[in-house]
Image 1 (cartoon, rainbow, N blue to C red):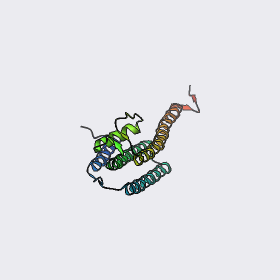
Image 2: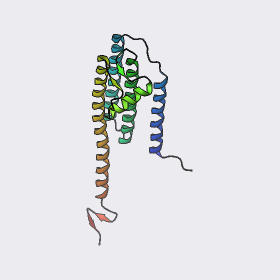
Image 3: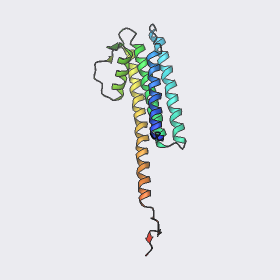
Image 4: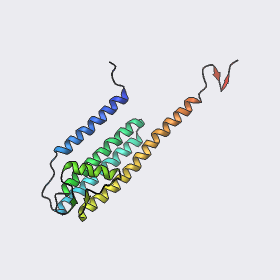
Length: 183
């Protein structure tokens, strides 16, 4: 049996990182008795830290000579961490009375965040209180920025691949000099 190639190892590594982050999400304690003010401070500080992490990682990836595959892997991991952060935050704000309708478990929170990111929004789980609505509004802004970055990186990946194919198809073949074949 042949060992997996670099692309397969990269994909396996990405899946393992996301699985580990998801496991941490399910075991990290969710505060049950916070005041609205304490929750808001915690949420906005966490959002600022997450935003800073994303900006620094994005700037580093764009400056570095990383391959598009590495950039996409990093984007997937950052997106997963973002979804897990907002899921954790939504689960914690749901403990406050009247903030969320039908958000009772961590899986409910994860489901809500993935459906929000995908812009599906079934409506079964939704923010009801002002604090939860403010948090979800910030999440939507994060999602828009993140999706914009993802589209930019993915389109860059395909543009680079297309350009390399064009350049490789226009190279002179062996025995050709400056586009003219020897007779």
